Length: 525
Image 1 (cartoon, rainbow, N blue to C red):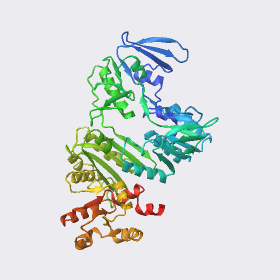
Image 2: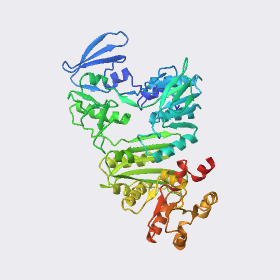
Image 3: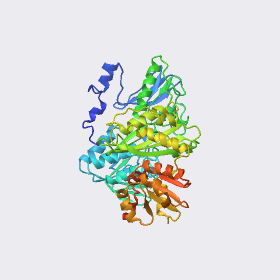
Image 4: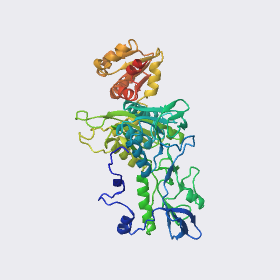
């Protein structure tokens, strides 16, 4: 859809350009592929699968010694009026993508509404906007984009980035109906009506375990096939893998539905090894992901802060913003990382990030995800041996920094507020608050002018000599560019006997990326 892959056949080829069709599997793998054939039922007692040829309608039984179910997932339906109108497109397979691209390239679509802001929804929104120049609106029933994957603070950064790229985002809204006479004309939510001539349904997927359930195999309440470490179902002669199964969450030790191609491939190797007489195991996953959004990436693994608390952990999170390479090297860009840690055990529970497009963010998240699989502690992140060279990383890399900040939080050395809390505090009358900008005067000048008497400035390097200017009877809220100088100022004030000092996590960079820059908020008002 995005045009990144010009020929749809490339999606079916090997790295050496052979199309993986029936002939390829027959000649190269000695595997017979029965295309256009539907599996109707499994007879576990007889060990047969009932098949029907879609071209002739003829049915027959196929015997098996071992059976593998790889039935994937199906798009979640909205069950609303107009869901089947012409111009409404699910995105579940190559045929759906071809239909969607065909409608766009025909010139019949000018404004699209995407329902759902998960991976697929946001990737489609980017493609429609960036490649095809459509007006795009995304409707999400949850309060934030990517609600199951990132924290509200990171989600605010994503929302601000999407808005800057021209994507309308409507969160906390439920789609009630899709209306039109001969095709899509509008989408009705519980808050507004959006004009549209195309609707993309991306409200998630559900495991396609209908065949398995009908055969009496164990299926979870969420519909996923239950499997053991060998990828065997409740019938030892039937294996299953891919988007139709639930696996073990290595963080919570609970079932996890993780419909990703990477999971399916690794599970396929385990199943194949066991079918051939081996003893391979798939222990589970921490749930790594990555998604490209225009010139930015979002990536993560494990639990968000809220998910960790919901799972019963005494969790805290540390958020840092730092350059993705040495600060003096050309091309540096800011990267945001949030690390979730259990306060009692110091165990790392999750990591999420937002940063420049490319491999930098994914590399950091992938490194921590590998540690998490082995039950890593926060010290393992702060001491992580990440490859260093100025074009690629800082000597004290951002991934090490987020670990050290988490250690400081656990030690009680760093107390602070995130973007949402800072914005709430700044919008109050502020009589009990003292907002102190630790940057140089030129950086602070616009805010000093906009908020006289409310915004104050003492550069961090001058603070020890100007302590008498800081009130001891108010809550001091420290701000700098990214949180480094404000943390050092916090230590200075604490050593001087100040007891109520807060650090704005991520500093002005976090406020700006989240759309909460006080100057921008004031101009909008």
